[in-house]
Figure 1: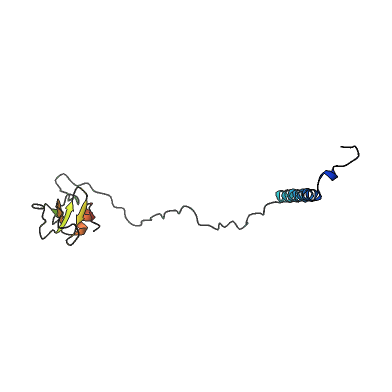
Figure 2: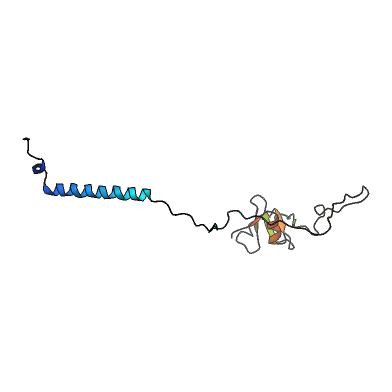
Length: 149
């Protein structure tokens, strides 16, 4: 290149215009970023009231009024009736005879699968009962679930 001759003749005018615009855009972005970073954040609301509910609710304390009752220990000659020791008046389930349930306990329970079958169910006739219940509620209380079909 000859001395005294610029480089402008080597670059087309469209490229020069593009460089000038991109340089100007970079300068504007730099000034905007500096102005934004020096701006202070807005102060919080001075009311002090939270706008959200508390994360943990405090349990209510039960307040009792009146005399205090203490548990008494029975004497050696007294007998205490324990709720757990009392047997129900009627059994909730009975043993089947030859896989058949009596008319008083028509619900068939299978202890291997813990499923019970009600009369009219899809598998009721072919189910070999291991326990017989009088109601579906008794079978559910014993840990069985009802057959889906």
